[in-house]
Length: 465
Image: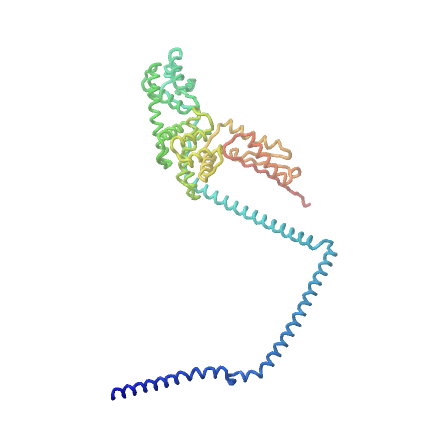
């Protein structure tokens, strides 16, 4: 019974606890709807303000609508005024608006083109002045750094004799010795009244050098007869071929070029016995190589390529009698044949404009070649050629109308033309200098360049008495 009573009490307690829990959770749910639906939630204070706000908004909308109408009327009025103004301007100017617009645009375009052309011309002039200044600086630096001497070469060699009776022994019985010498060497032996000397004449420097060595050896030996002459000739020829290789190697060393093919070195050595306007071609090639390397270094170009191409640029002259064609193209083909790069071969071919220069190194070689050959003292001329050139220069200038006096100056590298101011004006003087320069280019052959200066001077003289 006690157990049953205890169980009953526990059940009553559980039921009571459940009722209490249910009541506690039911209160918030009941209060929420009351708070949301209650008229005291805040709607009552705003209800009197709603009619005032609506009235204010309506007034504002009416004001905005009136302002919009006013702006639209003003815009329409401005458009009408603009159209009226345009019609009046068209009436006054006699052209339509589209036509006036086209004329204005064309005027602006022409002005822009004029301004652009003026700016381009100004830039070109500034660039030209800067380029000329820099070129002069580079050339002057290169010429000052390179001081090379030149001995004028000729087409004759002179062999000194210990006694005049040696002339008879050189001629031999019935001239057999001198005929043997001339047949073997291909050089003319001139034996005349010149005391103690035999002159060797020939255009091929190598053959002339072999003849000189042969004759000197015969004179030292004392035995002069056809068999001995032939033996001595081949001996001298062999020695000269070895000497030519040594000269080529020395030239390559002086120019600072490495890795040149032995055949090219041999051809380079042969240039020692070639001349151009009296300038030794090997010495000229070495000088051009050094000038080209310095110019390339100043310009930031390939100094090695320029040096190498400049050293070999005239190598075609060593074989021009064996291969047909301009020496520049022949030299380019030889360079390719013996393993030189295309850049070097192209620069060699372009130094006389046989092909158009495509690289800066080709232009540098061309400039260095002209610089070496054109500077005073590098190349010589005979007195007769010199006097004839001066005379021809003056004759070309004097045959023009209005020329009073002509003076050839600076060894024929400049010609000054005095004109009558009454017959030649400033524009005509400019044209006259151009015409004389073109005629000189057409009619004369000369190394370097010739400057033509036309001088027109007006003098007004009056005496105070």
